[in-house]
Length: 433
Image 1: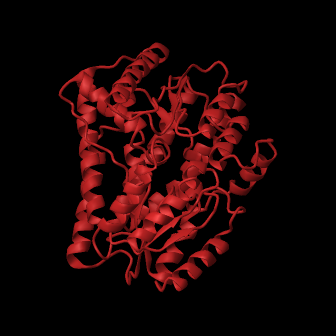
Image 2: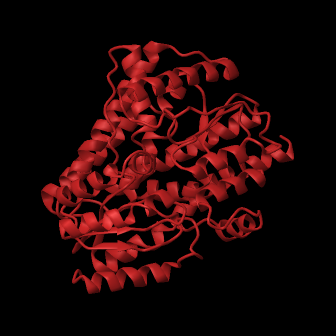
């Protein structure tokens, strides 16, 4: 394999090397939570190895955005990778050895400093040759101008300029006509993938895959209901894994639905026996934005220092619906709704601010929330425009609201210590501690 292709998978190899000893340790002394974590790590490793194998043997594979239906790719037997995964794998625990050097190198690229760091980092990965160059790319142009701008830059890079790209065209409205239109975009996506990979779609297999992912979504919804319990059953690690499993390779794998069943069973037993993973819970937090890459440096402190638990978060609470598999058209309409109306960030940023009002109102009441924390990621300017609405909604609900102001990728913007200080002062001032 030439040097360019080897560099493109170098981070995947590093993450495999990082996760393998963790996996071995968990297998040596598995416990109830360890068994759930083993499955997640094995899935990450298998996904990475599959892409490395495709690169090494020059087999077709795709890069895709997190909104595009994985069921279609699984049913067509096409490997793919979620191309912002670097930002949330090793970096998610604060353990990536490259975080600072990546951010510093990103700063030299001349991209305006107020642009979303999630997007800037992705452009850096591309410019640095750290993304495997796929057979074709399934893109995203919503929900914000930053994503559309990133897409334009991305497809004009010399190494990617010849990569065929399909960007589904998201309509502005959310009515049935819009859903029907986007379902047509999903069918066009199938034609695009078939053209560039030679793989065809069997509707019968797609139905089986969707029915299997429906089981996972249904169990995820049941798990979210269990998180309403006081105390909440789990720490923050496992709930964050729920979103990963429905957006990664292997959609339609019965083992994934079984993992959700095991999660629900574990949560049920903890609720029934009153033995939460986090003891002495005192503050129930609704974290209303995506989790920072360095969440692992914040949440354990919240749990141990303040007895504060993330009872619900934005990524976990999206209005996903089970898909009607009775006909081809109902399947594509269901996949379309999941793709352009329901994913985190997309659900909150497109359309009306009513989505934000409804989310906060429903979650505060259903989950007995003690305070709403809006991290205020500097790149989410759409959300920033809704901050005053959030504050008013929380005032009407008589629940404290904290707007931090931070960068979910870059601790230099607001340091972990500054975040902790803001949260500590907030808890004290609101009488929550």
